Length: 164
Image (tube, rainbow, N blue to C red; front, side, top):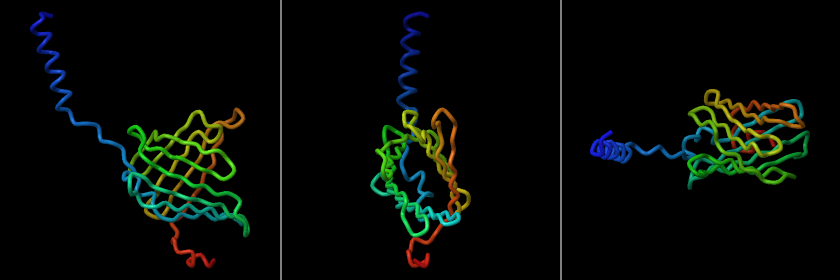
């Protein structure tokens, strides 16, 4: 290619990149559908999650598992933006904290992954209509694939609504 055409090609590439729209930055607003209170009841076990609305670039969540009349597990979570992705920073009871980065984000689904974590390596949520939420954790544990599913229904955030 002659040098003058080479310069024209470079100029077109640079101008094209300069005028191309920037990739939309991922924000927690994209998963605002997760906000609210969610509950799953099976036999004598109740699992609850509560997510605050997106604000200040984050969503804060908390969960607890109650078996009978005793809290057996709890977790505090912050979802925030990190390097153009969403980060799920989990602080589970009795375990070290871990951060998982988003791999799938849509209007109904969010999946986070941390391949270096022992178990789980993936955490996911999928909205099913306005009042149902499917959550899961999955990955390898002791060399075997494992997945744990949680089926939540929307719950009132008022503790008096549960009769407690």
